[in-house]
Image (cartoon, rainbow, N blue to C red):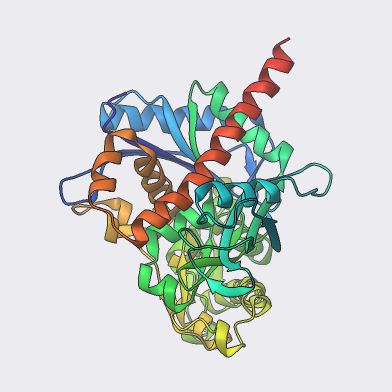
Length: 429
């Protein structure tokens, strides 16, 4: 594989996307090949059939290789699913040499201490993300490096997932003949693709509506503050249409895409669509008003659960208010009038997030269904040694701080890959 190119692999409930790209001279991402396959072995973000998932990954990888002309060996992978949960935690260390300034080793020691927290049986800490620090009781410190102090304390956002679910993803990657590069929580990848630095600083909630789950990620002051996974997505809406209209699954999906609306008021009672009958049966007539009522009922449930997560974060507190509002992304965000319905329910400014800001030229990858794949490709490019020199040369101040923080996730990724290798060696023996 050419070292200039990187690959993001989005293993979703309805589709698997492999995206190959490189950074051009304008610091934009040029997508050179995209492979897509139907995801047959994943339910609500969790692998439930290893063999089918491996086959789907191989189909997507083969198509991406064919289109890009690049042999793919390593991929950046996203982790999502209903097994993901998050929590807040505060911890501290007492420094042995308070006469020396705080450095990266002190922060690493504090983070390593958090990784040793005891979770529920079968759970593993995926991400430990520092939010703000305290030095000798002085609070609201964003970057303690270079300061003097004997007690270093921090508030952390911790993301936790089931070890078995994470291990199954690793097994599918390895069995597909691939190496696992960076490992990232999918809402964090999507946020990199569709949110601006200004939005993250002002306060914003990202709602990524996928096929099996809806992921929520909340940012404030440029820092991740809250994450959640709601176990409903576009597939549940299609299932409701299938049951409510007594039609087959493919017809329900096509109805949703072509005629679906989240707002029932726009259709008249006389608006009818005719669905072909199965194997010579008479066509079936369906009222578009009935269709939109079915869609609206489920969408309202999803939005209300997402809004509950926003309120749980503390949005109604003036200090925690999300000034930039809500960004919708993922395949479900393309549903007509969804933006208006979200604004009506939440009272917050809303827009649909497209990943095009980071891409060069015109391409199909501007579609919100590719937000996670673009974000994972961005993560892969960040970690690519071929791009490292340019990134450091062009970085100052806050950028360098962010790069230091990214190494925390890199260390976890390396540790997790060793963990997977050890597990596989155990089974092989």
